[in-house]
Image 1 (cartoon, rainbow, N blue to C red):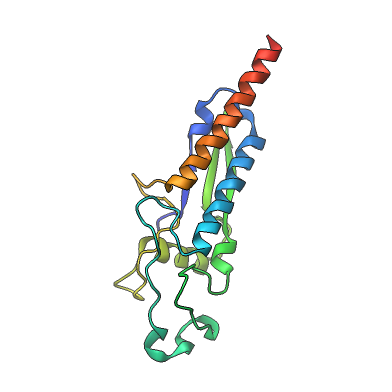
Image 2 (image 1 turned 90 degrees about the vertical axis):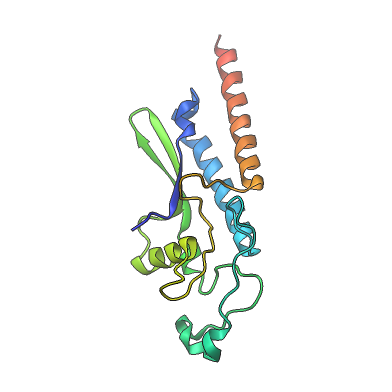
Amino acid sequence: MAKVKTNFGIIDKIKGLEKSSGATKKLGTAIEKTMKDHISKGISPVKGERKFASYAVDRDGDPKKYPTGYKKGKKPINLYLSGKMLSYLTHWTKRKKNSLSLIIGIHPNAPGDVVDRAEAHNDGTLVKNNVPKRKFIPNKQGDKFNVTITRLIKNLLSDEINKTIKKSNKKS
């Protein structure tokens, strides 16, 4: 089973930031919020993906075939039916000795059906259940966040690096 998450190992490469879980949490919160904002508008936060593929047209006119009888709207394709899957889209940190990683994805404690649904949307299952790929987490080699999120990451990291430099200059 593929993991539906992405990991930022760069944080432990920047001297001083690897100990700053506050900076990491701030970055994670900003990325998560921006991802959910893009998804709510039907836009993939993954570079090169743009808008999500359309939903099936009422599954042959039978709304009962959707979970709990929900009828999906035509636009935007925002991966929000009950809200359960996106409620598990979050960020967390993982510390190993002197390194700190920021992970963004479907939380490890999410129920199995949520993980399966997330994987189906992220990778597509055109053979089974006919779910087109709607990439919302860059989890494969070569996947990247879109320009907006990449710029957000660069700006926040730049701010934190500048703060770290100013702190070290004051100590000198």
